[in-house]
Length: 258
Ligand code: NAD
Image (cartoon, rainbow, N blue to C red; front, side, top):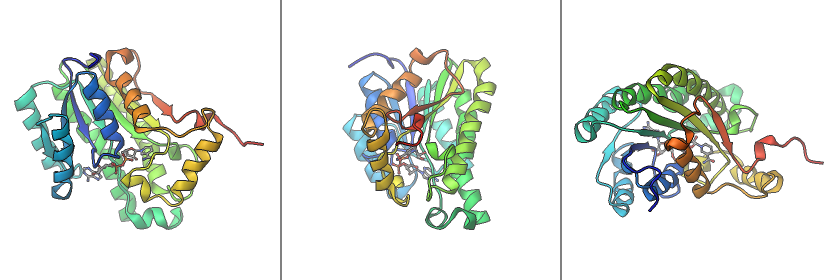
């Protein structure tokens, strides 16, 4: 076991199953000695989350529907009671209604827009505000974004708009929390097969394109993203905040291929 995250309590929100990006981050953080706290969305995810946590010997696994202030308050008061302080928070949560990523963007409904922005963006602000109270020794907050915030990927639709707002929120949160020694950054992950990704139209075409065009000639893995998160969660990134770092095998730097 390494010790990059020794004596650090890290809260990870968004482990749905063993394919989740958040699970890759959990595994990497566990190897580096972090004490991990997990959340799952609700009853449906309980068994999977508890089985995964048990595999690492992690006892703190709590439900939290991020659209509920009551759930978020309950979670943070429980963590305060049990741990007193946290040093890391991973926000790996996003959601959009299926019709809003199946139809053309122009047909996005008012309700669908509000839901996508609430779950995928406002939630970062909501949890950061509570985390601030427990990050009394400074800390690091990470969220996950995608290139669809900067460029058009047909089918990513309202989620692209949500990710653009998420990245702007990272910068504003970094400004608010910097004086407290709390850093806020985003990893812009290359595409990777997860339950959420399955909902995106032509996702396998997106994966193929990365393998073909990315300078590293491959797609990213869960391990690549876990290791990138270690940089942000650890003191190695002590002077970096408000950033969006692409971890995508270089795909985002490419123009049109001849
Ligand atoms: P995933 O399906 O494994 O994780 C998404 C998580 O969001 C799940 O744990 C789900 O329970 C949670 N969630 C949704 N609504 C919630 C709610 N109301 N309350 C609590 N939790 C809720 O998929 P993933 O791909 O690992 O997604 C994690 C993050 O990574 C997301 O922000 C996603 O947009 C981002 N991302 C994914 C990719 C990719 O290609 N998979 C690329 C870039 C960024």
